[in-house]
Image 1 (cartoon, rainbow, N blue to C red):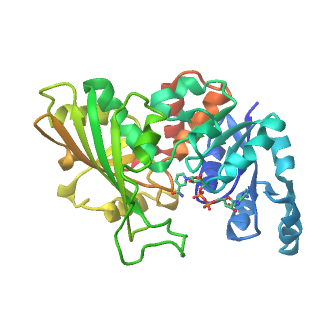
Image 2 (tube, rainbow, N blue to C red):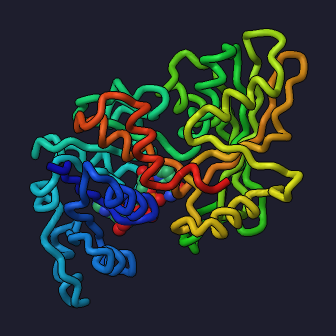
Image 3 (tube, helix red, strand yellow):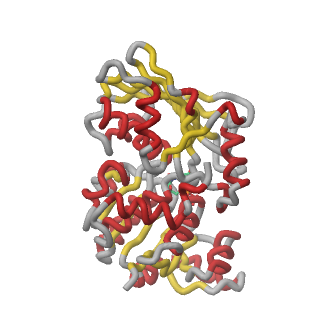
Length: 341
Ligand code: NAD
């Protein structure tokens, strides 16, 4: 019998996870919740996902708009073996009490603190530690991207220190009130929170990060500098290891992939749903080693890179698959993840 997945919050992340769950043969979407009867609620109904109202007193608003709503959040939880909480940051922590009271497993997103679940997940790093767990936090888009490339480099060559700058998008494409519109806005908290967040997944990694917001909506960008422990490592050694790493891909400047804009164009040309780029693209020519210090650039499609991780987290927590490699392969095959770049 398929595992029954409820998705609380059907926004940027929730709608992508719902579509990914629907593609799996070992799980199914039993419902999604919204707080208002907007265009995403309509999309849920069009996709055939049972719609629930996350805030019970707003239930009549859905019916006024002619939307068939099945009930409130408690009713969604009753239908579910596991809830994937995709509400805005901070709301998940408030919901956690209800999930515990109603004895349902829960996955939280990166907008919540590590403490919400006491465990932060990345498929490559700690899949097995999520096996059978009741609560897990899938880390943010930036943290997921940093873990995907730094973990295999650390495993193969050792890392003494990482310094990385996050060039962050101002908002997601649908967020018409975010910014900046015409400025570069540095985060004055130095180092930024991203480094400590990576350490919730890879505790023995020495990493400091800084962050800057820029007027773009399509992707984040990371400029990464790594002091390697092993000497005499060559750029090709790094490229070979990352080529073997799931959900990391290379892009090449010499065939015109010079910016995040062209990466999104590749996704559009490939017919990816919503232009999603689930893998982390690394610029091949940016992989340079100077005096044992590695440099590279990577891009992050903030709206989608955490989606495969959520599918693996469901599989581990529900004990559907013990082997991380098998889960990763299954998820990636259903998403056609290796078919694009
Ligand atoms: P979003 O605003 O696009 O979607 C949030 C959804 O939750 C909406 O459907 C909204 O109707 C619903 N919602 C609002 N208040 C609610 C409440 N009280 N109870 C239930 N539902 C409520 O947000 P998002 O970008 O999908 O972010 C969701 C989570 O994923 C956050 O923790 C965020 O930090 C994290 N995340 C976001 C991104 C990104 O770039 N968008 C990337 C990785 C992780």
